[in-house]
Image (cartoon, rainbow, N blue to C red):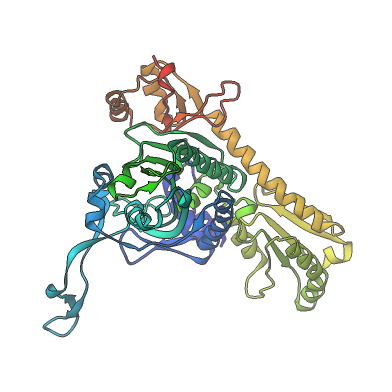
Length: 490
C-alpha cells in the first residue's frame, strides 16, 4: 500500500491526474467496457446511497413523492418543445431496431434489418417530455395540484470527453418534476428546491456553495430560469453542483396539459424540474481530499469509524473483548463502525488503506493499550493521532465526528473565500483569471459580451448571485467570472 500511495499523483503536479488516480486507488469506480461509461464500485456506491437517503428524506419533506417513468422516449416527444430538443439533440442515443439475429456465418449476431422501429426511441437524456405526456392524464382539476414527483434513475447523454463522476455518457441522478396552478407557486418551488440542495451540500457534504440564477445562454433548454449552486474545487474552478429550473408553461402547452381552475375555467399548469447527480461524488473528492487520499465528511462516509486491534492472536482476542461493547454502543448511536481484525494484512497496510479511503476516525488498540487503559485515536482530516483514556471513548468519538464535519466545512469555506476577487478592470481580469478563482465582475447583460469573455479567457459566467455580501463575500461567487444583476451593471 505504501507503494500505491507514492504512485498517487500530487495535486500540485497534476490536479486532473490526481483526481483520476484517487478514484481508482480508493476503489470508488473504474472504466467499463462501454466507452464513456464507468463502473461504480461498492465503496463509491455506498457514498451515493448515503446521499440518496438524505436527499430523499429532504425531498419528501417538501411534499414530493417518488415515481418511475420509462427509460425510452418517442422521438416525436422531443420535437414538441423546440428549445428543449435543440439543447439535447447532439447528446441523444437513439434506438432504431428491436431485434438481433445470427449472422450468415453463424458466429455472431447482427441487427435484424426487418426489425426497424416505426418511430425511433431516445434513451432518456432527461424526462420532461415523457413525464408531461403522462401528466396530461393525471391533471384534470385544480384539486390535482400541486403535483410533485421525483424519480431516481439513470440517464444517457452521449459525451465525447468523459471524466469519472463529473461527466460520463451514462450517469445516475434524481429528477424532480412538479406542476402548479400558479406561476408564483412554481417559481417558489424552484427556489425552494435550490435551497434544499444548498442545505444538503453545506450540512452533509461540507461543501460551501453559491446560489444564483444562470444567464440566458447557460440556462436549461426549455426553461425560463435556471437556478444553480456553484462550488469551488481546490484547483480554483467551479463545479455546478445542482440546478432547479422554472419551466413556465412551455411543457404543459407542448403536451396539451390543462386543468379546470377554481373558477371552473380551463387553465394551464406551471412547471418546475430539479436535479442532482453522481457528480456530487466528484465534488466531494475535489473539495476535501488531499495527497494522502480521500477526506470524507463523516455524515456521508460509508465507514465512519474503523477499529483495528493489534497483537498476537490471544492478545487480539482480549482487545476485541474490550472493544466489542464500544462498537455496539457506537452502532446504537447510528455510527457505522468496521472492526478489522483480519490477520492477512499488516497494520501499516490497514492504516494506509483506510487513510486512502478517507475513513474519518481510526481507533487502534494493542496489548499495551489494554494494560494502560488507553486507545489511539486518529482523525483523517488533520492526520492527528493521540493516545487517550479508554474510558469515555464513545462520547469522544461521537463528538470527534461532528468536529471533523464542521472542520472540513470551515476549511473549504476558508479556501473558497480566499479565492474570491472583485474586479472591474477587464484587462486586469484577463490576467488574473488565468490562476482561477471566483471573480465578482460587472457585466452589461448581453450575450455578445458573455461570448467574448468566454472566447478570450475561457472563463464562464456561472450565475447571477441572489445577493452579494461584501462583508464576508461568502456564498456569492462563480467559476472564474460572475455577473451581477443588471441594475448594478456598468
